[in-house]
Each structure stands twice: as C-alpha cells, then as structure tokens.
Amino acid sequence: DVKVTQSSRYLVKRTGEKVFLECVQDMDHENMFWYRQDPGLGLRLIYFSYDVKMKEKGDIPEGYSVSREKKERFSLILESASTNQTSMYLCASSPSMPTEAFFGQGTRLTVV
Amino acid sequence: QQPVQSPQAVILREGEDAVINCSSSKALYSVHWYRQKHGEAPVFLMILLKGGEQKGHEKISASFNEKKQQSSLYLTASQLSYSGTYFCGTEIPGSARQLTFGSGTQLTVLP
Image (cartoon, rainbow over the protein chains, first blue to last red):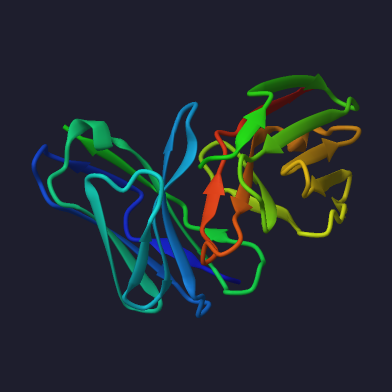
C-alpha cells in the first residue's frame, strides 16, 4: 500500500515559534503537495513540488515555506507561527502520470 | 484558482440520487474526485482526463465537459456509506500537475 506519513497528528505551538511539518511518501512519487483545510474553504494549496529542490507556490503561500531535499520527503515550514495558521494541514503525493493523489492523515496544528 | 463546487451541502435519504457539480474558470487537463469522511484523509474516487470520458465507480459516476470546463459527479441510489465531503480537484494544462481543490460538498445520507 502507498503510504504518505505525516510526522504528527496533533501539534500545539506558541505564536512566533518556527514550526516544521514533515511528510514522507514511500512510492517514489515525483509530486508532493501541502494543503490547508479549514471549514467551508475546502483544501487550499499552499505549495507543491514536482521534483527534488523544485517548488511552486500554490494559492496561499504567504507565511509558509517548503523544503524538498530528498524525493520522499517534503517539509512545510512556518517561519513565525501565528494564530491564523491554526488549521488542519494535509500532505499528498502523486506520480508524474495523471492518476490519483494519496493523502496523509493530516496534522492538526494549534497556535496559541 | 480554486474550482467552484455546488451545492455546498446535500441531505438525502437512502436510495435517492444526487449530483455534485464542479466548474473552473480555466481550461482543464483533468478533474479528480475525492471523498473525505470525518477525521479521515481524502480518498480517491476517480479521475477524468480531457476527452469528455465518463467514468464509473460502483454506483458513482462522473462526466467531464471540456468545453464548459465543468465536471459532475453522479451518485445513484445512495447508501449510508456515501456520506462525507466530496472534493473535486483540477489540473490545468502546463501547470506541472498542480492539483487544486474546491471547497467541498458535504453529503449526508439518512436512513
């Protein structure tokens, strides 16, 4: 089975902290994505990567950065966490061919 | 750039049918459909590529109208297990497979 693993299910961080959300996939997929899920707003794309060290901004990149040093790992970084970044964060991966994307279980981040 | 989904919510009785629509302001390369149950990750249902092909998955099928940049998901004779939030995801030509999702449609099937 394809697995997309996010390092934490729940995180509580303080305002101003630097936060790292980690995602690892085991299917050698080229594409990896970070989404933010909020009620009524659906899944909003923050960043995606189509190759190692390659990244593209999504619809809401402000306040976030990403890192992809290895093909299997895609990290989302909140440089200085703020309360409006409290949300569910979902990572996904997909191969280069047009087929399904696989999601991780999500990280519920609370910034206090 | 998010596709627009409608309706936002649907409540059905078991055995009834439903249609969920997804539209984009941009030309599309593909449309994905996913279902998410509460507390779980979204799960893939189907993908439709350019060509207007209709696909099916059990009693769930979908169509893709390239010219109108729209897709519809059809749920026939709904079952309790169909409850969840349905998302359409779209890919635009030349976007390096950027997959963008709509705001979702919450489907509730009652006994």
